[in-house]
Length: 160
Image (tube, helix red, strand yellow):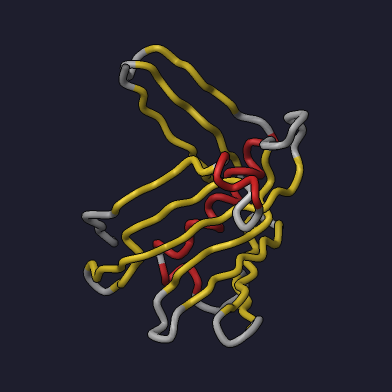
């Protein structure tokens, strides 16, 4: 069985679309809750475009401890804090935040721990990014092992 799809967020709206065999819609979601969840995922995945994290009008940084910094991203008037942990060489090792989602026992939307481990890294053009990623809901809690939903190995990246 082949399933394909994506989360998306642009111009203040987000959605989820997945298809079976590329033609039969299985999941289609677009609502204010879906948009807020997608905005959170955009914030969580910002490490893949390091230039999006440069300090400015919509990006503020603060140190947390020797290994952790918090970046607050202002995306469409929502401030989203994201914690990045780095190793002694400056490599990003984890991302952690509170993300809007419905991964609760009663499927109601709430802010839920979200994040994951980042390892390996590779230079693509002018950027060095993590290339091994494992993320999910309830990151940093005992529930995480049941809510990991995404693993990826980046083999190519193109920045325009």
